[in-house]
Image (cartoon, rainbow, N blue to C red):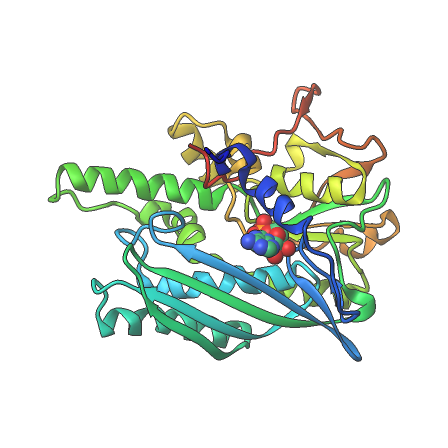
Length: 344
Ligand code: ADP
Ligand code: MG
C-alpha cells in the first residue's frame, strides 16, 4: 500500500507552522501565549517571562565564505534579542546550541563565541547554557532567549486597532542589498581569486547584513515617551510579510505610503545599480531586524520627533486588504513574499 506524501514546499513555512500549531492546545494556565508571536509569553508572577528560539543553518542562513564567525555569533544573538524586543520586552538569558563538522577548529569555535560574547555584553544578556554536538553537513547554531516584560506592557502582533498609525524604525532593504553585494563579490572572487573584493563603499549595507543590531533602545525610548505600542513585530522576513502578520492577527487591513517607507541612500543607489526596484527590496528584502509597530493616533505627538521612528501608514477595517499607495498615487496590493526556505 502506498502512503500519500505531501511536499513541504506546497505548504510553505507559515503553512507548516499552522499545521503543527493546530494540533496543540495549551494545558498550563501559565502558558499565556503559545505559537504565533515573536516570543511565547509565560506568566511568571509579577511579570511575563518571554521565550523565543531561532536557528541559523550554514548554506541556508549564512555562507562562511563571506560571514566571519565572530559576526555570525553576534548575529545569532541579535536576532533572538530582537524577538524579545518585538514583545516590548528586555532579553535576559540565552542558551546556545551548536552542531559542528570536523571542518571547524577550536580557534573557529573561539571566534564564534567571541561574537556571542560581544553581543551578550552589548545587550546585557547572560549565556546560561546550551548543547554541543556534531553535524554531517555544516554548522548549525540554535539560540534560545528569555526576556521579561511588565504584564501591562506586552505587545502582541494581534493588538492593532482601526486607524492606529503604523511605525517602523531605522531603514529597510539594506541587509538584503548588502547580501547582493557579498554574493556578487564572492562570484567575482571565484572566477578570479586575484581580484580583491571592494567592499569599502558598501560598508553600511554590508554591515547591516553581517552585523545586524536588535533595536533594544527603541523599547526604552517608547517607555520613556509613555507610549505602549498596540501591536509589534520585528522585521525578519521583510516589511510586507510582517505587515501581513499584524493585519491578519489583528483582523484588520494595512495601508502604507510608498514615499514614507524609509530606504537609506546607499541601499537605493545599490538597488538601482543591480537593476532592482528599491521599494521591492525594502518591502521583501528581510533581515532588517527593525521594529514594526502600531500606536494609537493620540500617541503620535509623543514619538513624531524621534529621529529613528517613521510613520508609514495606518490600519483600516477592511480585513485582508493590504495596500500600498505608490508615489504616483495608485493603489498597489502588497504581496507577502518573505523568505521561503522550502521553495523548490
Ligand atoms: P520569528 O520570525 O519572529 O522568529 P517565526 O516565523 O520563526 O517567528 O515563527 C512564528 C511562530 O511559530 C513563533 O511563535 C514560533 O515560536 C512558532 N514556530 C516556528 N516553528 C515552529 C515549530 N517547528 N514548532 C512549533 N512552533 C514553531
Ligand atoms: Mg520575530
